[in-house]
Length: 208
DNA sequence: ACCCAGGGTCATA
DNA sequence: TATGACCATGGG
Image (cartoon, rainbow, N blue to C red; front, side, top):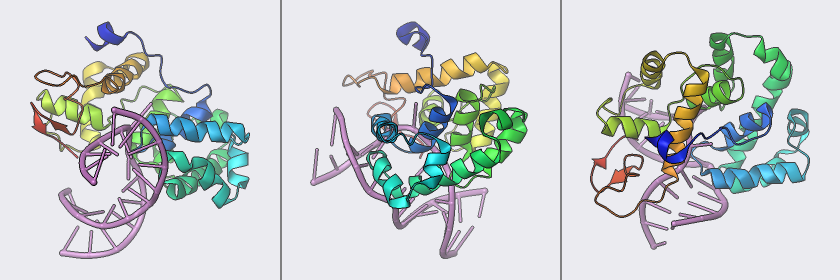
């Protein structure tokens, strides 16, 4: 199905675990194309490092993050995350924790909610965690598997139980859903993309 | 000109 | 627990 159409995605876009984490925070409710611009700014200033970010002035950091939207909030979130990340011993220190501990620790960082935490767990730490995003909620609500207003944890548990603890599968599965969302909607009747959008001519309105 | 995007926090009831 | 306001840019 989706895999047939798009092939392996090899997600997440980003070369290092830290870059993946930064992207996960910056992409909150934001188009990825805008996140790329912000990350490019950080790279151009050689600031894509936790220490450099912690030491940056707020107005400078916010300026670099500007294209990704919510730049004042995201500057604070990135800083609080980087402070925590350094204190925790960066990747090596955190990678010692088991998935439940690591998830709990991530959720304790201001600015990191369930979805961002799971992006980081799955794509930066390669832990078997299934990411529930807006696309996934809408798609499976319209397919009838969920009503659309279940809690995040309920859906995550259901997917993880149904698919088994398979990091590579979780990785591809979520990536393919998002990949499909980038597909242009070809008018009606069966645009194929409408299961992922808020409003669909055929399926009505679902979820958040 | 409008709608939306790979959410999260905080205030309120 | 459950809504709602708020954050803000850029592309279609």
